[in-house]
Image 1 (tube, rainbow, N blue to C red):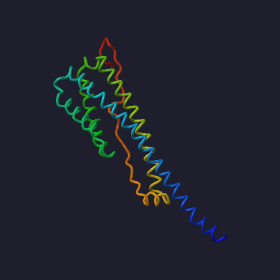
Image 2: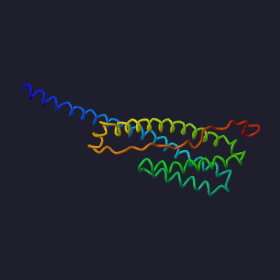
Image 3: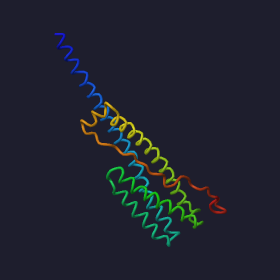
Length: 190
């Protein structure tokens, strides 16, 4: 009888360990999916702001047409990209660079920089970028925890045994950091 108890304990302890590790990995994988949905929501919010921003700039800066078309094309590409995180990050980096170029070119149009609609869009973009960066940090924290569990022994054995896929970090800088102060008498102040 004692031999059966010892044999049962020897078999039960590893089985319980595997179950606990497996459930922990599933939980982390689900946290990553939830965190990505937060990132995705903020990305879509950014995509919704871009057409309004482009239309407003277009009204003042018609000869920036090539850049406006580039921003629109990249926005549409990012909106349609539902692929792996590294592919989305690559497209997002291109969009962020194009948005930064657009906002730098806006500096040459003082009447646009003082336009209330443009300033409101810029404020919304800043708020969206802040929320996107917070969601990105939350996502990357979950990815870090998941990767640590998948890569450290002995939980890495369970991750390999059950085919848990690697997760990628999402690193995209904000497109805009702050909205300039406006003095309506003089235009935009430095």
